[in-house]
Amino acid sequence: MGLVARTLERVKPSPTMAITNKAREMKASGFDVIGLGAGEPDFDTPDNIKQAAIEAIERGETKYTAVDGIPELKQAISEKFARENGLDYKPSEITVGSGGKQVLYNALLATLDPGDEAIIPAPYWVSYPDIVLLSGAEPVIVDTNLEDGFKITPTQLEKAITPKTKWFIFNSPSNPTGAAYTCDEIKALTEVLLRHERVWVLSDDIYEHLVYDDFKFTTPVQVEPKLKERTLTLNGVSKAYSMTGWRIGYGGGPAPLIKAISTLQSQSTSNPCSISQWAAVEALRGPQDFLKGWVKSFQERRDLVVSMLNQAKGIDCPTPEGAFYVYPSCTGCIGKTTPQGKTIASDEDFATALLQEEGVAVVHGAAFGLSPFFRISYATGIEALEEACRRIQRFCASLS
Ligand code: PLP
Image (cartoon, rainbow, N blue to C red; front, top):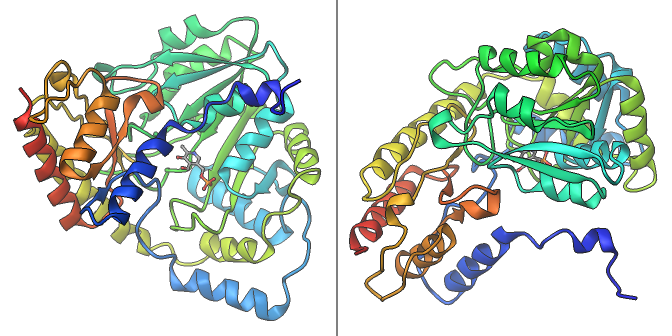
């Protein structure tokens, strides 16, 4: 009998780790490496939020709390859903976890049985299929394409649904493509979902505030309220408030699902960090005007990166609506050879050679389930981005 459980054996170690480790090693040995792999904003957490955490410590908010969140935070989340999304979630329909990832993990583990299926459009955030595999269920991957803006079409969704489908996992704006669905695009998907009453919807809205060019964010339950009874609307403070390290995520959903999530959490981590919960209350209730400046800055970076990448030979970079990622195609570089004699047969070869020859760390598309592409996170300073894009242009021009 092996040490590792059979379900864990189905989960592969993160494919993004190899390139991240390689970049770290190169940096440590003195190479000038520009890392464009990070999935977090480069801004600091706003001062009013830090101050709320300091005050919480000084008030003695340092003990266990209710497993799935203090009442004040659930109330603040309920108000946020009403104010920003037009959604009516009562505190009993809200759960708080240690990051959106824990809420997602708990929701899937609490509801999936072996044999169940979860539909995941590719490219996807790597945690979706791996968490489904951990539950013993099957991820059903639906490939999107650049021409459709990396968005699943209603026909594709309809075809993927089977009697075993339990969840449709939806992420807009998306990690890794930055693609965000318009209200009409969501409506067309909800029409399919209305015909399949047993299918639950997990809408991961974590990048909702990071949208550009006056794009209007909407979420499935807002577009089709009839789906509320079988949707988990997932969100968190990590990306909008630059609070990745504080570990607070939350979800709104039907009370029985919220209760199941809480049961699982009560036998694993218990409550999320008490101090972080108070910081999140301030994040959601405090001033929101700083966000405008962040969004403006992200949009400038996106525009720079898209424009410079489209000037690189063999690269095709669509302009995404949101998040802080671009997902360019490197089809035009496949089959070519680097000056050092390495053949680029895949997007992983592309990313490895780009790192070795120009010191730019990106994540290859295969890690997110759709090739040949790569992901760049532009949550980094504009000078570093400009230099990285110049290097990518030089690298692509050097291929023959
Ligand atoms: N959902 C998506 C699409 C993400 O990219 C991430 C983080 O990278 C998360 C959820 C979870 O974030 P957190 O656990 O920090 O709330």
